[in-house]
Amino acid sequence: MSETTLAAPYVTLPPTQAELPCDDGIPMETQRHKYQMDLLIETLEFWLAQREDGFVSGNMFVYYSMAQVRNKDFKGPDFFVVLGVPKGERRSWVVWEEGKAPDLVIELLSESTAEADKNEKKLIYQNQMRVPEYFWFDPFNPDDWAGFSIQQGVYQPLVPNERNQLVSQSLGLGLQRWQGKYRGVDTVWLRWATMEGEVLPTGMEIAQQEHQLAEQERQRAEQEYQRAEQERQRTEQVRSQLQQTVRNLLQAGMTVEQVAKLTGLDVSQVQELGN
Image (cartoon, rainbow, N blue to C red; front, top):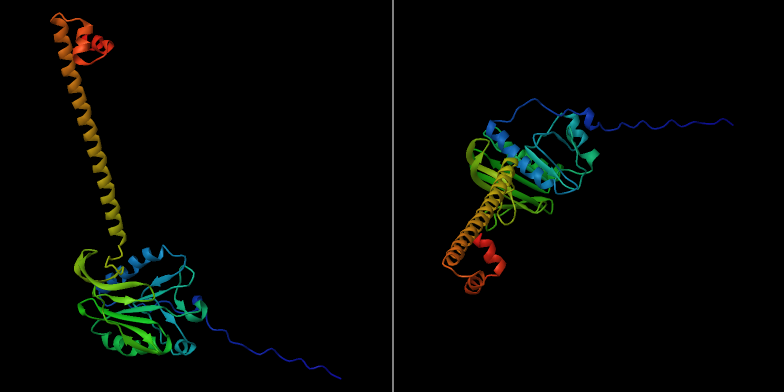
C-alpha cells in the first residue's frame, strides 16, 4: 500500500511594516498645516510620557486592509493617536501587525482636501478603519472645526462643552481653539487641553514655566537674604547704640555693677561693651 503525502497549503502572508511604503513624498499643504500638526503631536507626546503605552504621529500611512494595499490607496491622517499599544518608533501604522486601528484621527482641512476629509475619508474612518473618534480643523478658518464619535457604528457629531471644547472620551482631553503664538506664528491654533481648560504645554512652554519657577525661587532666596541682612544690620545698630550708652555711663563715673543694674545687662556684657 503506497503512502500519499499531502502538500502544505500555500499561504500568502500580509506585508510587514518594513515592506510597505511609508512616505508618498507629498508635503503638507502649507507651513501652517505642518506647524498645526506638530503642535498637536508635540503636546500630546508630553502627555503620553506619563503613560506606559501609546503612540502618536501624523502624516504617516495607516494600513487597514489588503484591498487597500493592492489598490495602493494609501491613507496618511494628518494626526492620529493609539492607546493600549507599546511605545516605540514606527515607519507606518499597520493594523494587522499592531492589532488595532487608531483611537482618534484629526484631519487638517485645506481648499484641496476639505471635500474628501468631510466625506470620503470620514466614511473610511467610520466604516473601514472603525476609528472611534474623528475631528477636523481648518488652520486658516478656525470656525470650520467639528468632532464625531461612533455610536452604533455611525459617526454622531460632538457638541462643544461649556468651555467650548470638543471632548475626546478616548483620551479624557478636550480640543479647543487657542489664540497665541507658536513657532513665531500668531493665529488661532487647535490645542489639547485638560477638562479644566488648561492647554497641554509645548516643550518651549515647559521650559518657560521652569524658568519662571527658577526665577521665582531666585527672587524668594534674594528676598530672604535681604530680610536676613536687614535683621543683621538692625541687630548691629542696636548693639552699637547699647555699646555707646554703656561707655557713656562708665565715663560718667558709674561702676560696672551700677551700669549692669541700670541696663539689665550681665556684668560680663557690660565689661565687653565697655572695652
